[in-house]
Amino acid sequence: MVHPLIPKIIDLATPVAEPLGLEVVGAMFYTNQKPPVLRVDIRNLEQDTSLEDCERMSRALEEQLDATDVIPDSYVLEVSSPGVSRSLTRDRDFVSFKGFPVTVTTSEPYKGHKQHSGKLIRRDEEAVYLNQKGRQVSIPNPLIIEVLLDEGG
Image (tube, rainbow, N blue to C red; front, side, top):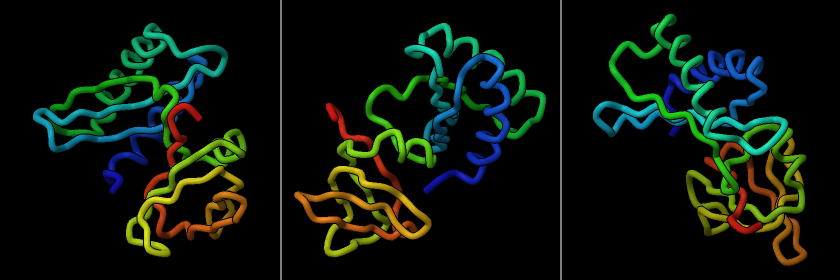
C-alpha cells in the first residue's frame, strides 16, 4: 500500500532532482519506525549514482520539504540509489527492461498465485505481459502491487 503522501513527495522531488542531473525513481514512507523514515530513490542519468549524488539530492530535497511542510511531524530523510533490484513503475522502465526477468506481485491470487515470474514482454493500459517458458501470460493492472526486476537478471 502506497502512503498517501508519496505522490506529493515525488511531485515535489522531481523538479529538485532534474537540475542536479538526477531522476527520482521511487519513494517509500516507513511510518512504522520512530521517527518515520522517508526514503527517496534516485538515479544519475549520465553515470552510476554516487554517494555525492545522494548527498546533493538530500540537501536540496530537505530544503524543499521543510519549506512546504508536506510532512508536518518529524521524520528521517534517506536518499539512496535503488541499485540493480528495482521496481518498474514508469512506461520507460517497461520499455528499457523488455526481455528481462521480472516478478509481478498481485494484491490477491491471480490464476492461483500472488507472484508471477517471467521475461517482461510489455505493459499496456490493461495488463503486464510476461513470457513464461514460451507462453504469454497477462496479469491485469488493477491487481498488480509491484513489478520487480529480478536480481542477476
